Amino acid sequence: MREIKFRGFNRKNNVWLYGFYLQNRGAHFVCPDEFATGKTWEDYEIDPDTLGQLINRKDKKGNDIYDGDILYVEFSDGSHVHVLIGWNENQMCWGCMSSYDYQSIAEGYDFAEFKGYILNAYLKEALICKVVGNVHDKPELLQTTN
Image 1: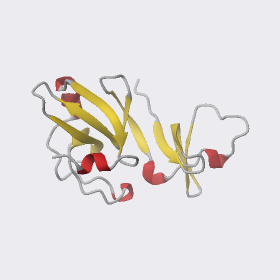
Image 2 (image 1 turned 180 degrees about the horizontal axis):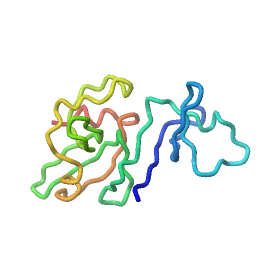
Image 3 (image 1 turned 135 degrees about the horizontal axis):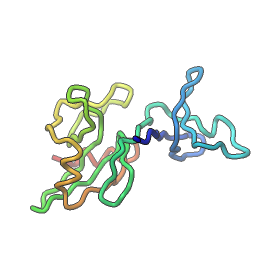
Image 4 (image 1 turned 135 degrees about the vertical axis):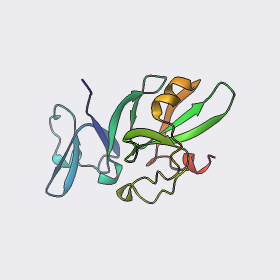
């Protein structure tokens, strides 16, 4: 069975939260399976622009990959690229793109330059494929590629 899990950034505590997602009265939350004693709802509230879903794939080091992650991919011929993970509505698959016009997550990813590489091809063919950050913490990684 596919694991459904989300992550989002909690500005109150300056941490990434992992667990299930819910929205209530205009606020967005990511909560673990069990609530910790002494915590309030504000400890689980996230910035909705940082919400990302687990895509049920792992990099070559075994790290979970989420929507909005940036992967460093290196091939046996020495070529390498940073790619952004996102959902492609047209092809109905998780995929990678190496460049984009980042406006905001609320406006969505621009997959105009989606090269047809699905994530599985990168994971199988790459010599190195590892999560090195995400579009929220390290957007500069994508600005230096191509």
